[in-house]
Image (tube, rainbow, N blue to C red; front, top):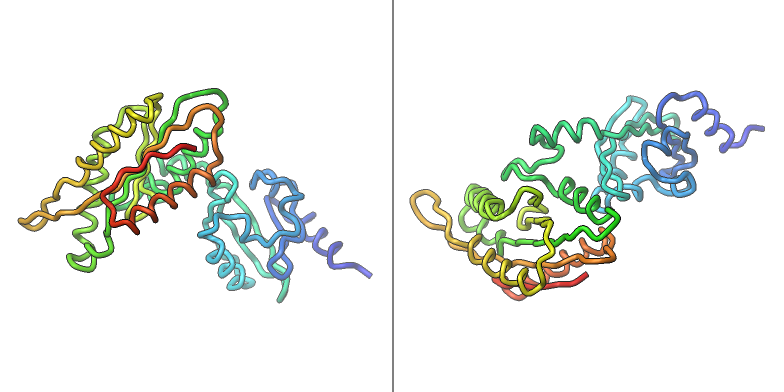
Length: 281
């Protein structure tokens, strides 16, 4: 009698390309091409629910995609949690409990989108690199061996939700674009600025400035970006909060840096904003 494991292994054996077999949402098998495409060891794939392999904020979306997949092939673009790799999953249901999932790296499309400022890599409102692109760049810089200097600056537009409720989304877009342009004007060639979310920006700086020097930069930047913005013949006033940190010597993980940024952002929001915070990693 053929076991389920043997049956699933046969499925993978005769399917071309990078493929995984899911049974009840859990990866039961992966072929060599899938291991290569995902960049994850087979032992870390098999036995794991597929959504757990992507970024936390995408796990629910991928779970819904899996549940909704039918015998007609459907696709979903995702980001893997290990290094933010862009992946396109395609799924075809073989039975009520078994799903065949293809995996394709979108590296070429990702790079072309970056060159063209496309939606895969760039924010549509500000034109800046989006969350996933700037975080993938941060991940690369954290992974570089040696002591290449790196500092990060996070900028939040304080209480943007209230501004949107009171003045509408067009004001928020105007303010966001202006903040992005003001920060970008202060950066140099090797530096990178991206938009983390509706309220936050992240700048990666190739500098060995001391924390005292970075603190002065942060205070000056906070005042400059929060200068009132012209809109419909009037001025829109707002404040900003800034976090600056220097990464020297041993580099922290991307997860640790993200967690610290989110913690400082929540602290700034809870305290009313308009503050500068210096951090170490």
